[in-house]
Length: 253
Image (cartoon, rainbow, N blue to C red; front, top):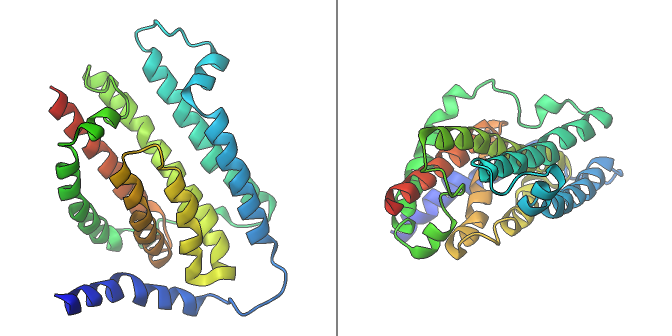
């Protein structure tokens, strides 16, 4: 059993990290502005999104009527818009200003089809944990993420569509902008740099999910550099999130 576990770890992670390291020129000591710009910009963007992107601030700024029938849904949409601007639009503009090809930061779809099976495997690995977690009271206090998602098909579909955009932005920020931007300097170690802030944005989630974000960051970061794309990771994220909301809605009925 131990030998099998060691083989799996090598096959999924360590061998991939060695390949990534071999592709990266980490020996150069010339000053590279990319890590400086990307790390400082990431710290600023994470702070702005955290303090200006919360629902209370957004509802106040945009004057959402708290008694309206879709007040909560409108607040969630504004929250997604803030995430998308802060984690996708602004980082893409920063890359443009640096003269970097934005598509090279995980946005190319070439070769995506051949890696879909990896996405399916990752989703099936996570699914049993979702089923077990959905039985806990703490899980039901957090999900469905939009508390009225079970009210109607309209509520569910509209929210999940916007929710998917949020995950695309999150994947681009952590596994595109940060990870690909740091790879040239840090090689495979860029994965370990990015999992720190990624784990921290999960601190308001249930303990098991927050702890699991570290392993998820390792897996999704390795997958992104291996496939040179964020799309498999985004699909895993979206599928897991929708599944969690569905299980929560079913449990609450």
